[in-house]
Image 1 (cartoon, rainbow, N blue to C red):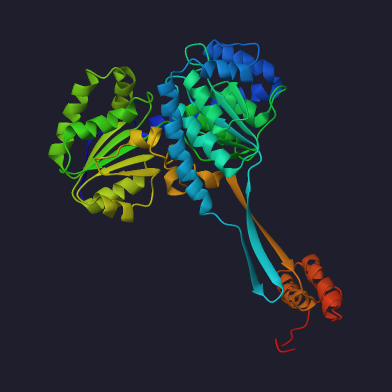
Image 2: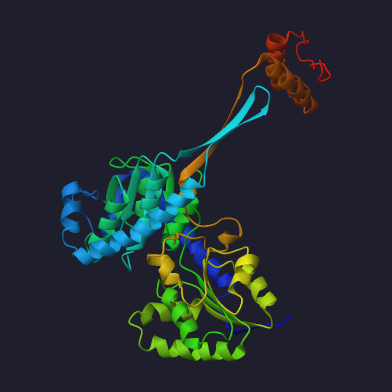
Length: 442
């Protein structure tokens, strides 16, 4: 097995040091929000966004005024993209059914899918106003039936971004707040004098937003670890360097720490892509950001075989995986660790980011090994229930339960079962004793 790196990004040690600095900053900031509430949130907004309105929560009149600044075409485009996301989310929701089954005569077991009762949706917008993120979180939460949807987004250029606010409103947000970063995440999870806390946080964000969600997990639920964007292109000689380079830089422009990886079995394609990236960086308007990401986090890996490419891809577990080979469906069948797959040269990650309908809030930092991305099911809790409708079944199940509890040494547990055996089965079980074994025919 031969795997060659033509280009490497930052070492794991360097990345861990960056993560440690982020953790310390977030921990201190969340403690400040907990201690000082609205005052801390306002101070942080002034410090990081130079934004301090009379109220961070928008009124309906303010929302309407912002939407009125958009053109008919901009509104139509937002509604079109949102409709694609909603259509797919509705299909996913329909696949999740409540069940009830009689496992034994008179023994009824079931589960219900219940919406989370309040959700905080973070929509990034510091460097770019992420209109599509509102569809992915707010609109999907609405499909799930969440009764309170709080949406936060930072100001863009010193004011609310009209397109983002429109997408939040069209998606079904009940509260829209112009707040960004750790202060938004902290306010939604911890609560302040002006904002009631939510039960769950969702949405992507920068390293500080992702770390804030991680630290708050347990106090509230979170969708997943969705940090800085990651992309991987798996390609062979069926595509060219321009396609590979464009797809790598298209995601590298997200931020200065967005990993972009080319995985190929063609050294010629790898070398041509490296050259093409340099050409595109000379003409790309967002090259300042993309170049920083590519320099520190870009990688080019050459493997001997498709099997090696598969192994490396699953080990990296990238958020976005663009597959352009002569066997795209083979990768679909075989890959197990990723955020989302984009199969073939006709589609691309930007389609998934903005319009095609699948959710773009996806696992990063290898979280694709244990979770998929945000979807309507993340907003639903599956709760089980049980009931027994006959005296005979109450006694039968109680007898087994009595003996099994005592097998583990739980006398109090056993008495819960014994009481039912006595009352519904008419069997005199000694206190703390095991219910007698009876043949089923009895």
